[in-house]
Length: 111
Image (cartoon, rainbow, N blue to C red; front, side, top):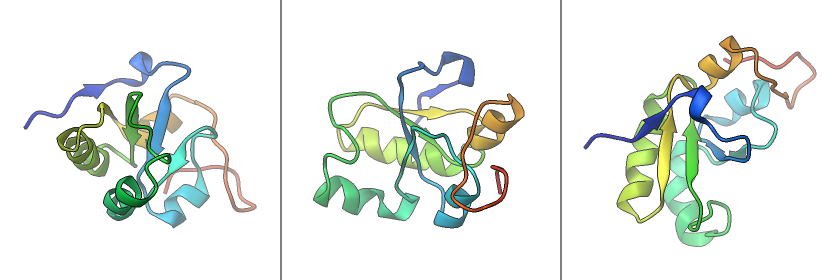
């Protein structure tokens, strides 16, 4: 299955961004408006907390580089959710100089 993918340049300013990285990655640096659900928690979240990942708008999925987010995008599509993978993930985001926030006391970074 080919997973729909967009570039950062195509990411809408008001996009719903789902970050599927692990907690330590999220804490080190993430998009301020993103929602964090680790990859392995996505199925349970969709099943038990359906408002966390909106079923009525496009979900833009990111991870560190695009591999995990591609898998989650395919799973979401297979479960009836409009989703797209963001190419290059958080490494592309950081390389483009886009703003990030961190949950620890260090400057935001991608790990």
